Length: 189
Length: 308
Image (cartoon, rainbow over all chains, first blue to last red; front, top):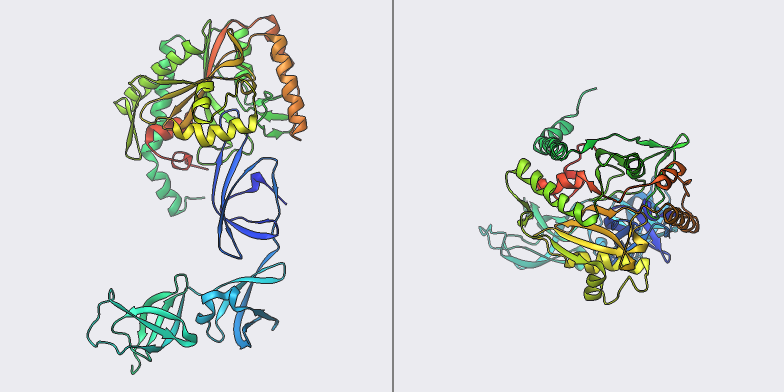
């Protein structure tokens, strides 16, 4: 149980059974008045935001959250199976993973956020490497990065890449944005 | 032990702020000395802190750290010291934010035979003196906006402000939670920021140590000074009636008990001094760390307190 005075940016709390992360916090206290704790929070399951203000007597629940370091192992039907260091398996559904499911590579180390025993999100490495499976042929020599075309990686995830990227090239993707970051090597290189 | 490189860089970067603070302290002392005020030091470690509804003290070894020097300074007033000021650390538990630190520096002064409007005039003189001495001008610059201490200060009566911006009169049917919410969400954002703003005549319920207005007992002779939307100073015509003060302390103690807050013992020495006679007096409490912040044009106490 948290008191309002425990609230601060970065703290995770639970409201009506849903875990939230406090993303913005500010303390105000009008002269001679009560303390007011203003919080902006992110729903850790849906990603939506919420603004709430609390008073000294308010109490908030502490969520049962666990961050578990795991490696991606394999796809089992629709679900994705991860294994921790004790070889215990955690199965995560595609809707929890979102676009992250396209960025998984076998043996990749990720952190799974588990709430009351249920996986609710994963944290990937910031950059991952993927092969381009499908795109229009590139224009050799056009090294501009501000003109883009669409391309697909394994699994059908589509993103915008510079014109010089070819099918078979290995690119770096920023998992925070899901966007193209860099070319790692060319198809024939 | 030696400073880490980061700490050294940080502290060196604060040099102009620390110099400004030193200048402000010295100019403040000069201002009051020239007006025949006596600088006093009252205990920071006290047997019992003043009873206020929303101010919580740190307790230590059977004593408390003072939340304000008010009661001791009033005992000096009762003993005949007519003009006194103090610059000292005060401590309030659970207050931490951009504008709050659990340990902060208070400038507090009292003048006998004066009321809250007299001491408002003196506050104007003080701030103008400090700006001229420490900044060489009467304007404060902050976030690309400037605030003129030299222009006419804007006075707003609290009931009128609430009627205009919140649609109700807190003097008629006081509702504490609504009062605070509206103050923070409707009133404060509406205040002009190009000049000093003074809110005056607060509902009696939010002025436990202030005298009530002679012509309207629902209101207390209290004002709050805002600079750039930031609350800087609070002042009262002091309550001098011992019986009324006792009644208000007891009421406050009852409310704190209901809120599950620590209930501090009554300060009987203060009440005894009041019984013997406090001259009519007015006092101001001004947050010095916030003043440094405003004079330096920065947004948070983080930018002016070297260790936080």
